[in-house]
Length: 129
Image 1 (tube, one colour):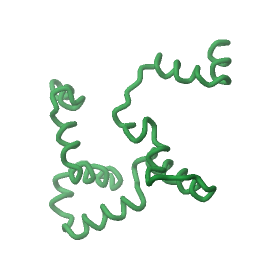
Image 2: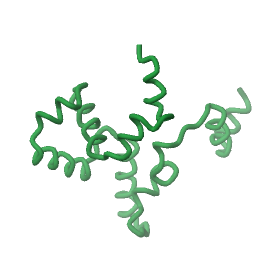
Image 3: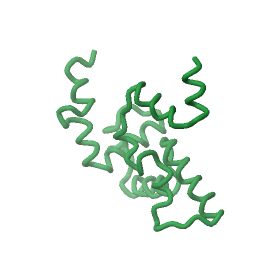
Image 4: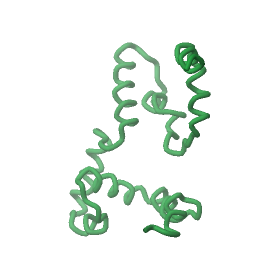
């Protein structure tokens, strides 16, 4: 159904993936549309008044939705700070996989298993199956 559009979606030509990366406002609209169950991002952009969109963005900065890694990192950084963890303002980022660049991390199943083998309990389980 998507045909050649799949290459654009995967970012191999810099198409849709590059466009979203260079336009964080549009990326946010996709996030908001997903949370609202709306598929037509352009229609959402045309119906939401700019002051309200800005307010939604501010809300998302304080309470991220639709991003499980970010929410988990935020909660973990709050707990760590309450326990006395030292931070240079990057505590939340330190709880994200690969230092906050987790979106670009694509591992094969083999690479994932290699990472799990670094943990003794998992290594024993994997080697005994």
